[in-house]
Structures are given as structure tokens and as C-alpha cells.
Length: 513
Ligand code: MN
Image (cartoon, rainbow, N blue to C red; front, side, top):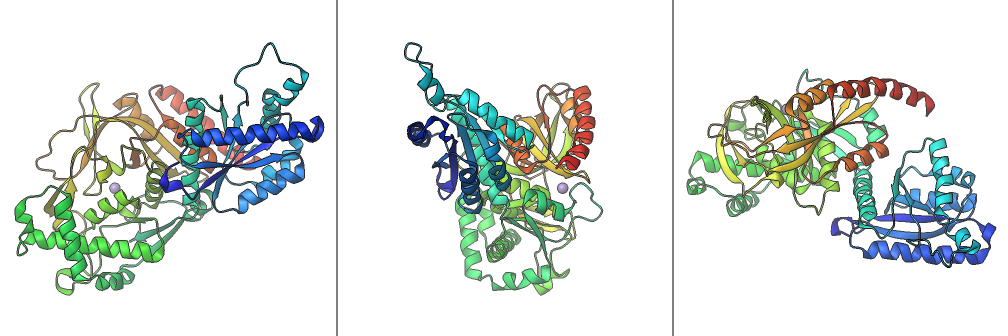
């Protein structure tokens, strides 16, 4: 169990029936409790499982699923059929349950006791029987869920449950997620835009806009002493040239302005309860900010970097879909080691089999992916409405495998594109002082980048070293959205088939549901 998830619960409900008599149900109940205790004690599950007893009739199933749905601590339900459990009795309960569902196909005893097995034993231990009956009704109802098959003590089985728990926790977080856009989409950009009503219906989060005039009161309420303290914190946390600490220098003033922007944004996010935000370099307050002091002197890049590291979702240029997805990635990987970031495909490096893509942005890369202690630097930034120097954290990313993901709006559905990538040793960029990563898409640059582009993927992504394809599979299943996975086994031929088949599937799927 990890601290970030300590207030969350996954409910465990065991299916049975009274056909075999009350004694059998008492045994089923005892076994279930032991299994739940054992799984919780394994140390492999990030969210605790709470055993909710056996369900022996339609009324009991309906009752427990209604309670699961109403309890805000409950992020999902695991079901298991110890004995046979006629599945018509699950129909109403499954209709009630909208939270994530995991069907665990396991058995209390690991192996068949060949010498002792008799009819009583077989009647009690018949998950092979009962889980098939239960699986049928989920299939018949077209009910989205995850099926995990394996012995309940096996770390591999627990690993599948752990991934689902993390995704279910992030899903619950998204259902209560407000995103604030400081500025609208960058004008005319298609891929970062989309249907915010459909996003709330389908993915849960709510997207709001905040005019810069509403940010100003927060900006003006920031105390100089707090800004001074934050600047001192920067100097203690990050490598930097000592000249930056000279209070009479332009560089110091730019760092101070960045710190004030960070305190402003954090105050707005706290006051509004928002978990994610977007910025737009064309919307930063008064045009003559240097004179009026009513606005940011440059995009709040350093603030975005540091707020991302705290877990706030971020998307550049008004990209609320990636802001939400980054928040989800950060949330579900809490307690894991290697970090995540908002990233942008920028510049290509053609080099045969080592062809790669430079991932950078003007400034906004999250320091959680840094290979070494970030450097605080101040440089000119000539993009957007302000042409002036600004502070930023400069670093290169760790080396290793990771996944980039994006969600695009296809008009009739959301499409999740998740791609395996390999971050390689970065090169020095002496004249481009920004944070960056350099990666080779899987299976190689030609196919990986080609498939992403064919699928209509953004130049923005939510990247993580800790996420495996199973996370995105579970996420897409819970959200009931299309998922395309670009992996070592992707070919353009098969990928194009997937695109065509999915087009038809999602048209028909809508008609079925
Ligand atoms: Mn961009």
C-alpha cells in the first residue's frame, strides 16, 4: 500500500449461491477473507482491498454494487466466483456498477489434492466453472472490465491487479478533476482542440477558462517576502552560476519574476481546486507589463516545470487533453521511480537505424525525468508575445525505455495513442538552453513515427518511464475509448488495418450501447 493511495479502497466481492448449503458459504467466506488478507499483506498492491462478503442472490449483488457506487473511497470492484454463481443474478448489480471492474479468475487452493479430492471439495472449489459463467454475463452485457487469470499469491497475478488499481485510482482522480486554461487554444491549432463536453461525459474531467484579468488579483496578492523565499529555494535546489544571485542583475529580476508567476499560478490552482492547467504564450496580461506590472513578463515556464513535478497536469498552448493525461500519468505512477513529463516532438535527427526525435519545448519539461540535478539558467526567449529573457530549468532526460501517450478527438470518439520509445543518450545543445529528451520510437523511427502520424497523433505527449502498455490497455478499457499501441511488433500494414477496423467498430459500438 502506498501513502498517496491510503484513503482509497478496492472492494472484493465473492460470488456464491445457497445451493450447496450454508456451510459451504461459510467456507467460501473464510477462504475469501484469507485471500484478501494475503493479497494485502503481499506488499505488492498500491491500494488496499476490502472484503465485502459473499453475494448469494440478485438482491445481494445489487445491494453491494449500489454501495460500491455510492462510497467515494471505493475506486473499483474485484469479483471472484469461488463456487458456481448463476450469472443472471449479476445483471442488475453490474448495471448499477459504473466504477472499474476486475474479474479475478483464481482459486483458493493452488493445486488439486489428488489423493483427497471428492465431490464436496469439487463443489466448493469450482472457480473454473463459476468464473466462466460470470465471464459470460459480462461479455453478454458488453461490460468493460479487466480479466486477471492466475494464482492469487503469484506476484505476476498481483502485478496485474496492481496496475489496474493504479489506473482505477487515476480514473477516480479524473472524475473529480478541474482543468484551468490560462488563455485559450493557440489560434488555429487543430490537434490540441476537441469536444470538452464529450471529454467530461467520457473521461470525467471538467475544463474551464480563466481570463488573465481574473489572475491579476492573485498576482497582486503575492507577497514580496514569499517571492524572495522561493528564489532562495531555487538557489538551494538547483545548480546555478553565482552571478545569478546578484540582486542588481537582470537575471536575478527575471528569476524573481518567474518565482512570482509560480506563486500566482499555485495560488489560483489551490483556490479553484484545479488539478491541471494550460498556458498560452499569447495571453500573459498587460502588453506593457514592464511598466504596469500587471501580468507575466514571459511565459511561466519555470512555474510549469515545477508545478508538473508536484503533480499538476500541464499542457502548452491551451492543450487541455494533454494536461489531463499528464495529470493521470503522474497520479497513477506515484511512488514509482523514474518520472514523467509533458513533452513535444520538435526536431528530427536522421541517422539510419539510430534516427531519433528531439523532445523539448520552449521551456516546459518536467524535472522528474532529469538525469542529473537541473541547472537554473536565464536566457532570451523570442517566441510568443514577449521577447525577453526568462528563467528555466535546463537538463537532459534519463536514458531508457518509456511510453508516450496522447488522446485525440476523432469527431465521433476519443482515440488514445500509446507508443513505446527508447530514450537515448542526449547530445549537448550549447545554443539551445532548454530541458530535453532524445528518443527513438519503437519499432524504429520510420514505422514508429509513421504510425503515430497515420493515427493523427499530436506533437504533444504525456511521457513516463514507469508506464507499461498494460496501464494504457486498462485505462482505455475503463474509459471505453479506442486505443492504438505502437510497439516492437507494429507494422504499417497491420496498423492501417487496425485504423480501418476501428473506424467501423466504433461506429457499430455506439449503436450497440
Ligand atoms: Mn506545442
